Figure 1 (spheres, helix red, strand yellow):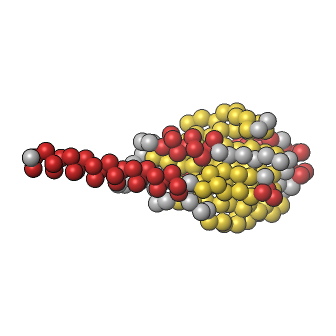
Figure 2 (cartoon, rainbow, N blue to C red; figure 1 turned 90 degrees about the vertical axis):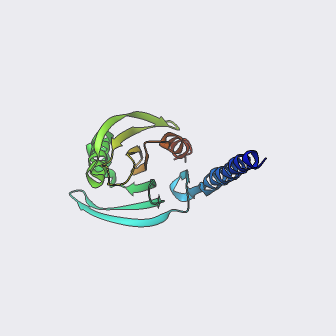
Figure 3 (cartoon, helix red, strand yellow; figure 1 turned 90 degrees about the horizontal axis):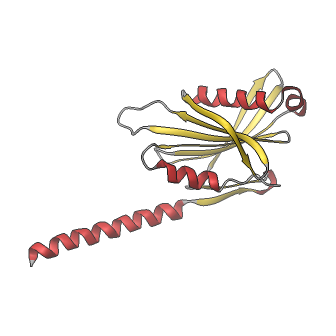
Length: 180
């Protein structure tokens, strides 16, 4: 009888901890909304805000970045207001190419693909990239969505484990809304 009860007890405890872990990861995802900027997205935790300043040939550019990093996976959304003349003069393709290059350079990553995507009628770009492997860490992959709406550039970016990361990417990007 002991030989039957112990395996059943181990299976029951394992199932309990698995359901708790799955349940807690589901509840960690929270709606993050910047109503005045027209952005809504689900993120696995409360994001931290960082303001970035960059001097460029078109003037000073300020980016508001909101990010969540759980020690392995990371998620961020960036909102950059660009000078109107820069958008009109250079066009969206130049802005997307510059943003792609900056993201790949800052993460020391390698481009996999850069393709067209649409969100709520706004045309943008989807960037998929490989990140450098770190010792004692699983393989990671990054994906970003870039949208230029008026003079504002929206970038939603996620870096997740290759193993099991597709569901997280799907949850993050399918919740992204840059309406109004």
